[in-house]
Image: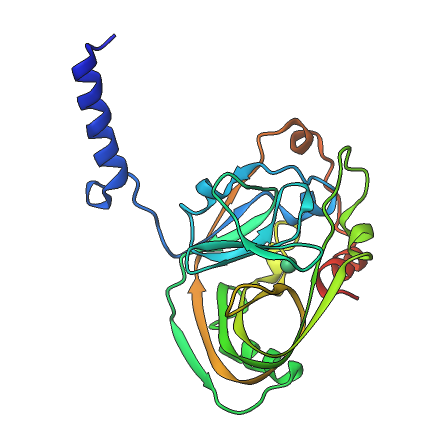
Length: 265
Ligand SMILES: [Zn+2]
């Protein structure tokens, strides 16, 4: 055992190494989409939080996901973590909250596209498609703007034992319709080959500028705003160290179930 003063000194040195990027240790690669668990595991009913928001925040300041017990939609914007619950209540969460599934990155814009004229949902999707560097790369997507209309959903918190699959629960989602609202769309584009691990295509969440409303985006219509795109060439997964994950039999995803869950139809 170390004498007490040496223990303190050692602790201090470790703290410096971990906290100071100049020393190399603790340095975080920013151009990575970091993901907790897999979408298939969430779809299958693994709703236990397996990583804290404190840990997740070390891997990104921007992203989306859900919370322990499937308790609503997660929106991560400018390093702050928000929860949009089934009743629409939207609050900032503390670092002790946990997540069963989330994706984050450090948002560093590679492309800025001003959207000066109104864009309905079809046109928004067209602009997003056109803004991708390639459909084979991950991208983080941010739209700051004033929206004529945003339709979102959230899901109800589940009680243990979790016997219901996500597709079944999503059928009971609550839907929120917001009009003439300023806020931010936060999301990702994932390539086709990420199927199973994540959701191929666009996955977008929304949070209002006053941070009191949001959810998983089903549809939106923009009055004016700005699109920012961050091409993200790294992908990292942190898999749950739980017996339920180890035992889970992951089969070919039910395409219809994914569509019900993610597109709301
Ligand atoms: Zn979502």
